[in-house]
Length: 285
Image 1 (tube, rainbow, N blue to C red):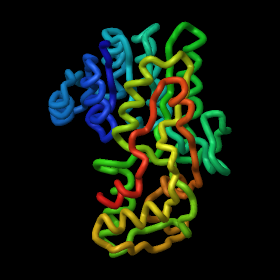
Image 2: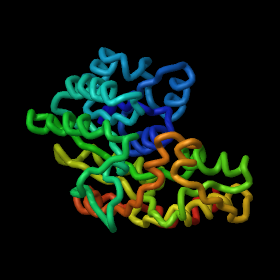
Image 3: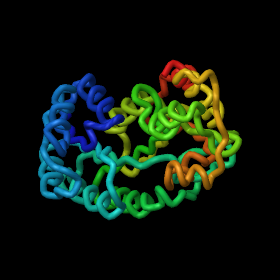
C-alpha cells in the first residue's frame, strides 16, 4: 500500500515508518528540512518537502497515496484541522489515520476505554472539534480512524526525558507531582508504531486507545527513571503549582490519574501490546 505520513522524523514517526516499511508498504513522509528529509530517507521513506501549513503539498501527497497517517504535532487546533481537511480531501475514500491522545479523557476513575467521556485538561482541549470533524468524514464516504496514544516510553522516552529525567539529573532528584499515586496510561514506542500500521485496516469511524494496559503509578515510573539516570531512586515531590512553573501547562496532563485498556484494538484489529513491563524498560533507560 502507498502511505503518506506526517511527523515521520519525530519520536513515534520514525518507529512507524520502520514498521510500515517492514510490512511492505511504500511510504512518502513529510519533511520540513533537509535534516528531516535525511532522517526519513534513511528509514526507507521518500521525503516530501513541506510543513503542516503547506496545504497544497499535503493535499497532493495524500491524493497520490492509498492511505494517510497523520502524526505531526500541530501548533494549534486550527492548524491541525486545516491539515487534516487537506489530507482527507486528497485521500478521498482511502484510509486516513489521525493522531489524538488519551489525555483527553482526564481522570478515568478506574479502568476506562474509548467510550469514556472527555474531560481534557486545557493543554489538549483543542482536540475535540478536530477529531469530531475528522470522524464526520465517515458519513461522507471517507475512512477516518483515530489513534489515541497514551504516554509513550521506550527508546528516546521523549516527554519523560524532557520533563523528568533531564531536570532530575540536573537537580539530583526526579520531580514527582504530588504523591505520585495517580496512574499513567503508558504505551511502548514499538507497540504504538504497530498500532498505526494495523489501523490501516480499521473500519471507518473507529477510535483506538493506544495503551499497554499496565497503568503503573507515576511514582513507580519516576522511581524507575531515577534509577535509570543514576540517582538510586531519589524522587522529590513538587506541588502542581511548582510543576506549572517548571513544566508549563503539560503539568496538568502528567497529574492525571488514568487507567485505560487496549481491549478494543485487540478485539477489532488483533493488535496486542508486546511490551508489558514498562517499569523494567524505564529503569534500564
